[in-house]
Amino acid sequence: MTAGDWLSLAQGALTTVTLSIVAIAIGLPLGLALALVRWRGVRLASPCIAILVSLLRASPGVTLGLLIFFALPTIGISIGAIPAAIATLTLITGAFNCEIWRGALVDFPRDQLEAAQSVGMTAGMRLRLIVLPQILRSAMPALVNEMTLLVKASPAVAVLGVVDITRAAVRIGANTYEPLPPFSAALVIYSLVVFLFVLAQRLVERGQRRAAAA
Amino acid sequence: MSRLITTRREILRTVGMTAIATAAAGLSRGARAATLDEIKQRGYMIVATEDDFRPFEFVKDGVPTGFDTELLKLLRKTVPFEIRQEIIPWTGLLQGVDTGKYDVAITAALITKERQQFLDYCSPISDATIYYVKRANDKSITGIKDLSGKTVGVQAGSAMLAALPQLEAMLAPTGGKLGKVTQYVSYPEAYQDLAIGRTDFVTNTVINLNLLIKEKPGVFELGQPVAAKTYIAWPVKKGNTSVLALLNGFLAAERKNGEMYKLQKEWFGQSFEDMPESFTAT
Image 1: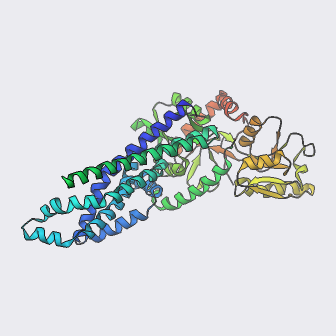
Image 2 (image 1 turned 60 degrees about the vertical axis):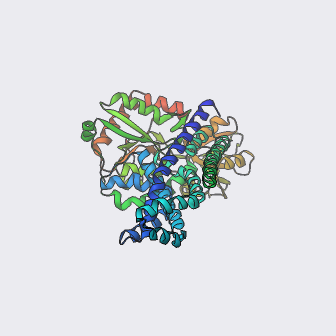
């Protein structure tokens, strides 16, 4: 592989990481909001979200991406490749995050809520001061796991013309007829990215433990 | 290791196309492509090219290159508006043309009957006729009639396999018969078996075979066509006659001034000066 090939892979890595981080940054609160609506059992909205989330969880990234990018223009909504890629990844990770948050909410001990209510806390206060800090901790491992899965699902958006790590490797392989070096390099880069996510999780958890001990 | 173009790709293309065509067929009927006037009015044309289809279009060191890329450069010089290029994988490309997202696909698309139902093709840019290749030192094969009874190597599930009945029909008048057919997962294996004598000839498109002969000079020798002529051309959305006319005008001019044939020689190792102005698959 030439220096130009390595540069292409590095640019692909930048794209993969940027897209993933943006999707996670939007998908985390989006998932939480959806989970809260479902947890509260809001009439009409709750079953609609349940169906939407099930559909999104069942939808392969490539299919969803093609739908957003190529099918939306037919109903008059035209969207660029990068926004379409972000929308695809955000919807997918948002749906999975919703289920993770919801799991943590469902497991949340009811007696704590009743205790908070008995000292006169409003619903907003209960959520902000009692529920969120605790479910954030209990959901963290599953959320980080979903982030690493998202990074690995991200090559799906290459179908929209976004050049991520995998697409960069495909291009190099198609050019040299030697697929082994670029794909090996791509695998190493993915491992590094996933390692960084796990490392960040450990640091956050350590911080949480310290805070809890203090 | 050398992996040559078109064949396995062609299968993937077909599978991908079918899936997406089915998925989006209902929706895309409502979409329409921009006419030439609309393109002029908005000031730019959107073209889609592929990124891994050597020698037509591929990306080297992050820079698009290849036969179609060179033609695109010439096209930019002749049109009075800007050309915006979107480089995307094959999977959604034709569907993007069909939904009007791209005005034309500056890509190597085989002209097929099924694609003609929703696309109009410009003048061909390359021959894609299936030829046979034999060992250079095999004196027993000098023409089509000598292929009777010989073992043929071909890729499983490929367009070349599907075209073998045409060869059978060509052999019939001289009392010849199609020999044993050996199917391979990919063409490099078929070429290896041909080189060591396990098969007597292999069929593939003329561009593939020219590349093979260029890479392994002295080992293989190109034979003759074993199927009806087929061509590769740029597709636009069906019925988009104004854009089609503009592109055909450009392509005709490039044929006339010889640039087209020069580029073909450079990228395919052969020029196709007898290409028809338009071609319809039947």
